[in-house]
Image 1 (cartoon, rainbow, N blue to C red):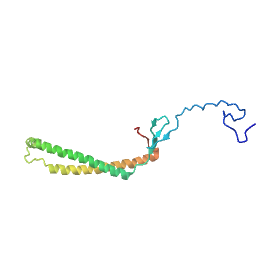
Image 2: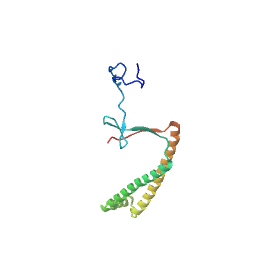
Image 3: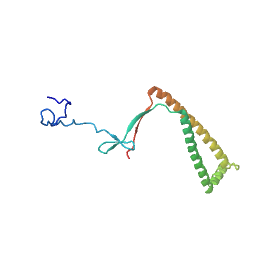
Image 4: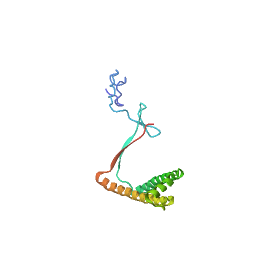
Length: 167
């Protein structure tokens, strides 16, 4: 006869028949135990091993305005370094007398006694060229960003996998 309160647990002596019955072991799991979130947001397994999280994202659009700003300042910095290196090189060559030697060599080779190296003329032209190249390459990068946006509409963009670093 069954208990009016409902079925009881297997192995419980108060169940029908009075004798304890054997309990089947839980089935074996092939997957790892579920992860438990930690305070810093990482997932940690019950056995204490940290598993880095990873996700896949697709870059579908690149903002042309952002590309313009980043490219302009990047190329401005690059040309600032290049022009600064030429200023240092010009100063060193002037200090060791190499500029005077080049001036004498050109005067002797071409029989032009009026030849002279003018640093201010060189550096004003160099700065104009540097600014022009900065604008040109910035516009090229914006064009490439617009072209990428058009192509990504057709093919779906670039897929990138991001993963968390283990600490």
